[in-house]
Structures are given as C-alpha cells and as structure tokens.
Amino acid sequence: WDAFSTILCNTKTINATYLSNHCLKHLGQGRHHTRASGRDNKLPKDLVSQLELNCKSFAPMQKILDNHHEWKMSEFITEDLRLLPYILSWIERAVVGNRNFDGNNSAMKSRNMMVLRNRRNLTVHQFVRTMPWIVIE
Image 1: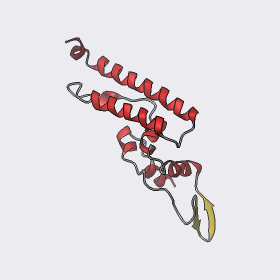
Image 2: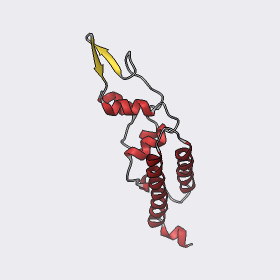
Image 3: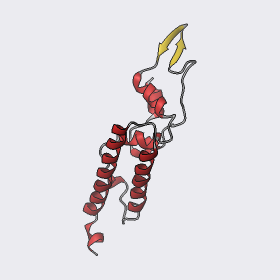
Image 4: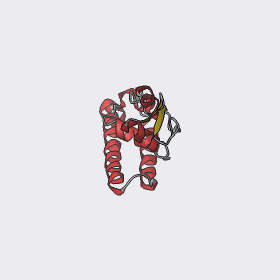
C-alpha cells in the first residue's frame, strides 16, 4: 500500500505533492475495500483519507498544508524576487479555496487560515532575509 500512498501524496517536496495524483478515488471493488485471495480487505486509514480527499477540489492545497509544515523558500529563490508574487498569489488562492471548500469543518478551515497567514509571512521573511540588498535598494 506504500506505493499507492506515494502516488496519492508524494511528500518529498512541495512540488512533488502538488503533482501527486488527485484524481484517483477508489481502489479495488468496493469503496474502501479490495478483494485479495477471496478475502475482503480494508485499506489502511491513511490511504482511505487520501482517497476521500481526492474527491474534493481543494485536494492539492490541503495535501500541501497537511504535509509541508516548513516551507524552505531557498529552492525557489534565484537571482531576484521574481517568484515571490507567484508564491504569494498561490497562497491567496489557497485562502479563497479554503474559505469556499465545503469538505472541511470550521475548525479545519480556521486552522488552515492560520497556517496560510503564517506561511505568507514566513515566505516574505525568508525572501527578504536571503536577499536584503534588493529590498534596501
């Protein structure tokens, strides 16, 4: 089942998680069961939760929020700040998507909003800290 878990949510990098499969909703013959050797086997809980999340439009963003607690912007920082607007725009789209996503209860939505605000601030901080000479000019 580990191979399916990796396909559904590859957590090696943020980009790998974003590019994971967000379409697969069922494995086997039943909703969350599979038949092997004539037995009815339940799928592991983490696999079931990934499959259930795939039924939602907010799946890629939620997987990133759930699996990447530290955003290291160093992999996105090149010679200038040209990627910063794109990253901040993605975060703002995630804020709107979270607000309109009916697959989460209000507690999860509040948690996501807090995480997104913190990540937005952390992103700007990391860019400025890495390239202070551009901000000063």
